[in-house]
Image (cartoon, rainbow, N blue to C red; front, side, top):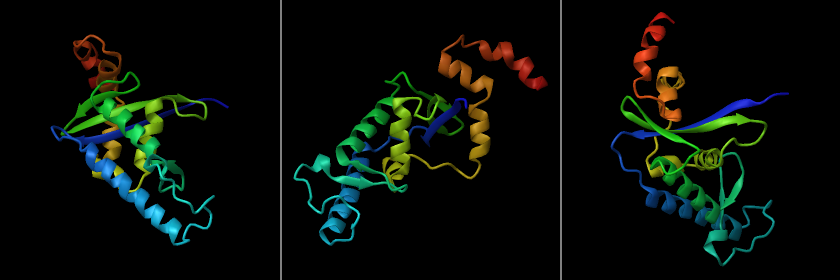
Length: 177
């Protein structure tokens, strides 16, 4: 049993300002919906039908059925905001065509390879949250986009911050492959 390469990407239109406040409002709306369902007894599997007084302890349910507290989801959003502003070591932001892309990942032995992978996974799994912030879900031609991200020409200078002239050195080789 070996390790797998696991990565997450989030994209947005170049020049677009991501709306983190709208994301927080969306999370609060989801948490309020859950609280309403608790009061109405529509959550029979919940441990308790009592609603915590502290809003940060309110529950947000994701598409895959995981539940997170509002406070945890907001901290994941803060991590991702820092990542999109190039303030974290466990990701990079690159431009591909008209899109800005946050890329995080690495080798996994069953766990998330970076803290930001955990945040990106939770954000992507929360209904409507990525869109509320302004991230694009993958376009129909995402396979081509991923292939382009993973080419040596695109990924090495971005992640490893190598010599900016590296592409000139490997360009002849890329033309032959």
